Structure formats: C-alpha cells, structure tokens
Image 1 (cartoon, rainbow, N blue to C red):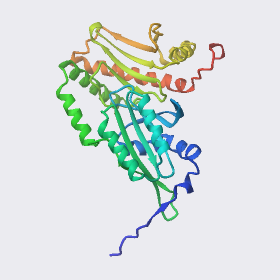
Image 2 (image 1 turned 135 degrees about the vertical axis):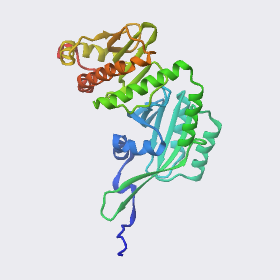
Image 3 (image 1 turned 90 degrees about the vertical axis):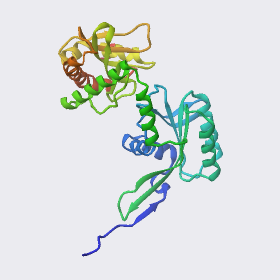
Length: 331
C-alpha cells in the first residue's frame, strides 16, 4: 500500500501578510470570520463594537462585547502587536483595566517575553473575576503554495480557565435556580425548539436563559429581537429592542416608516418610545395567556416564533440601513 502524500507546514513571517498593526492586522482581525477564530481559541462568543476606540487616554485596537456572558457590561479589549511585547503596551492594558469595572483584556503579539507573560499570570492571580487577562501569540502557517493560515496560541489565561470549569459553574448555577427561574429557562428552551422547527431567519441555537426575556440577534449592535413573558399580566410579546445613546433617534427613524413596516408585516405594532428610559421598543403582544401553563406552551411558542421571524424579515434590512444623521424628512 502506497504511503499517503502529505504536505509540509511552513511558517510565514507576519509582516509578509500584515504590513502594519493599525491598517492591516486590526481590520483583518475585526472581520467576523476572523474574530470567530479568536473567539473559538478563547472559548467566548465575541461581537465587535468598534475599532481604534478611545478608552481613557489611549485607543484600544478592537473593543468587543462578550455575548451570553451573563453580564451586560462585559467588555473585551483587544490590543495587537506584530512584534515582541513591550512595556508601552502593558501600560496601556493596565490603564484600560483601571478605567472599566468589568473587562477582559486580550493581548495579542508575535512573541511574549517571559516577564510580560509572568505579569499577566500575576494579574490573574491578584484580581477577582471582574478582570481577566489573556496573552496570545499569533502565527501564520502554510502548506506549499496554499494561502497562509492563522493560529492563535494562548500563553497566559485566567486561573483554571477552561470549558470544563465554565460547565461546572453553570451546573452550580443550575442547582441554585429557583422554581420560577427553572420554568423560565425551560420556556425559552421550548421556544428555541419552535424556532428550529419554523426554519426561519431567527436562530433557535441561542442558550436559554433563566430570566423573563430571551434575546436574538438581528445583525446590528444595539438592536435585538426578543421574546418576553410578563406573568403578572398574563401576557407575552415579541419585540425589537433598541438600546444605546442613539436609541430615540433610531426609533423615530423607524417610526417614520411605520406605514410601510406595518404593511409589510401584516399587522399593527405597538411603538413604545419609553420616554422615561434611554431605550425603546417596537412590540407585538399576545394577551390572556399564562406563561406558567406548560400545556399551552406549544401555542405560545408557535406565536412567538412566527412573530420573531416576521420581525426579522421586516426590520433586519431597515435596521442595517439606519443612519443617525438622517432626518425624518429624507426618508
């Protein structure tokens, strides 16, 4: 039997592919398909918020949010170096950490010196779990004339950071869940199954949460689709939730398209600017239902799944196109 023909891995110099950190490597890493490689290495689900973002006196290369972290304000700051680590970048990272209440710092470099790796290990030992420090070395490899492929190697990470630890933590949380929270999580598990069966644009692969709402992505930061249960009012709703400093502006831009939106979706919507709050929502309600009545869940989940897919179909392209500089007169 003839031996299989195998290629030989060859290391590629980083500067052969990325000529600079700011104009080459950082934009490459911020692309979703490449951020997914980094996220898989770290064991997180990351969503890019901004590039070259001011954080105190410095500019973070990439600013992300950690999705499904259980903390709404879990920031992930990524600092890149295509050279050996240095004290300047270490100082910037410490400044970022001091200015944020909960943050994960990811320092990516071509090579870590032993003193900088040891410093990250020490920071992970002396800080609580509000602060996490990762050090990663980036490499490029190819076989023959194939395109270069990136590889991230973790050289420093928080103490006992692993998938097994995360799973154990979730198991402890499960043991401590109240009856109501267990019901809520089971409710969203059923909705996810209904979304999978509906086979629409809203994914049913989200982790069910032990809370009264369940968010789903619509393709733009600050906007989420959501299923919500309000047990005291015997009510459930599907919504487009708009968060952030520009929420009112975006809400009014969408409200300017109200006739077209309701014509496309096929039913009237509740347009809730929430004047006493920063955020806004556009919703559809189903009243007279009991979210605790498990026998009625299939009917409730079918209603929510259809509404969420309707919302995605009608709002996703409109949300993506929103420009805060627009005025209602230009719509």
